[in-house]
Image (tube, rainbow, N blue to C red):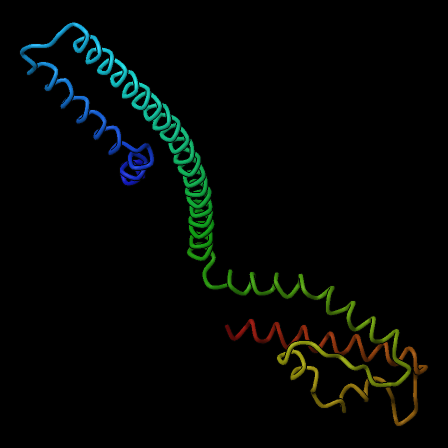
Length: 209
């Protein structure tokens, strides 16, 4: 990075102007040396002019070098900071990959040890973790409705499972056409039966995995 930006830094320090000043000074020195004869007054004037010119060139050179030094330090700090950030990001990514690889190794070892049943276990655990949410949703709808129909809306898969014929469910709620339970209790029983159908259907799908 610094190698690529160094020419720009040198241009900003006006090195070309300094080179031109040095060339002028070189020309004046050559002229002064080539002079074979000169009176004392002219000689003193020429020496003073050369020393003044040398002093001006030195000032410009020192100023340019100070500016270049400051720019190099600033650029170096920026490069170091960016490199540190990149290193930290790379380390974080490497650690994430290491954890992912280790988890994959453990999963492969478990599958090799227990066979494909581990997939059923994982799916069952996922379903188990979702059941409280399903129950709370059904319970909330049960508490809000005054009808005998419980409107359950989940994923398309669950909706298709819940949309089973209700004849069997009705037989469990009524016997010989006479109502055995109160309307409120009957709704709760319907909810429990629906959840039972969901669990049975999901476990059946696990057996076919």
